[in-house]
Image 1: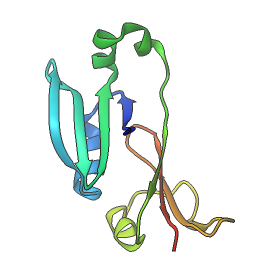
Image 2 (image 1 turned 90 degrees about the vertical axis):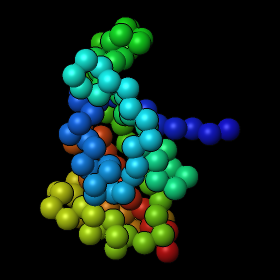
Image 3 (image 1 turned 60 degrees about the vertical axis):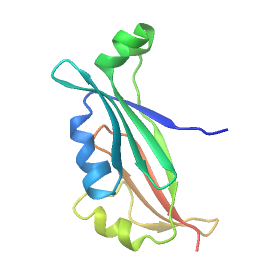
Image 4 (image 1 turned 180 degrees about the horizontal axis):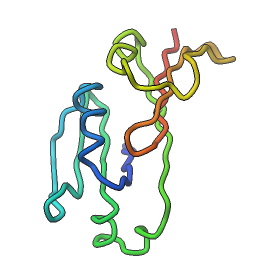
Length: 122
C-alpha cells in the first residue's frame, strides 16, 4: 500500500518554487488546464506529492470543487539544517521547536496555505 497526498490549490504555479526550487522535488508529470497547470506530480526520493488546481477538480469531480481545502503534511527528515537553508526567508508558523516527544520541528505554510511540518527525530 502507498498513500500519496493530493493538495487541492487555487493555482499550481505559485507552489512550484516552494516544492521544486526550495525543497528539491522534481516534477515528473504535468497536465495542463487551459493556459495554466491543472495537475502535477512531484517526487523526491521515495516521497511523492500531487498538486491539483481547483479548476481541474471542478472538471474531474465537480462536487469536490465546492469544498475549502487546507491540509497538513508531516515530513520526517534526517537533518533540519538543509531544510532551514531551503526555507530561508519563509516565515515560520511558530519558532523552531522541540516537541514533548523529542522531535525538532520547523513549521511553515506553502504558497497555498497548507501547513508543512518538517520533523527530525534525532
